[in-house]
Length: 111
Image (cartoon, rainbow, N blue to C red; front, side, top):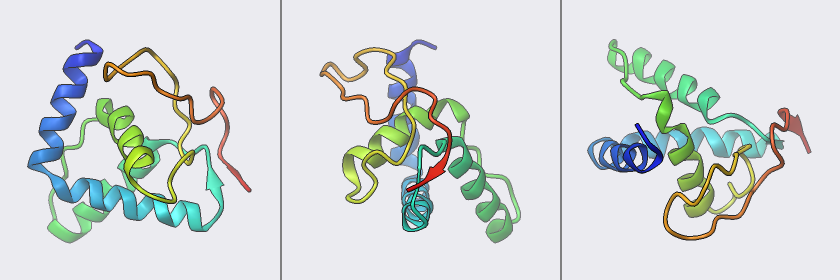
């Protein structure tokens, strides 16, 4: 899959599963409250999958390839989450320039 196909697939997944975004934002805000920045969206994916498994007794299909989409969406749309995730700039994904929100490969740290 190229970048555009991943972005399109992630948007379609998001429309079908709006609760995933809500759960990811909830986890991101917990990290922010602890002062943690530079976290990986995959860490949050794991937490959301775990919570879903406990609540529904079945696995949540949440492809790891959507991590970039969700990290950008959360930082773009959710007040208080700007800069919380380490993201790499791999091009112009949405037809507009994108700011790099965190240095490359920063480890998880507390403020």
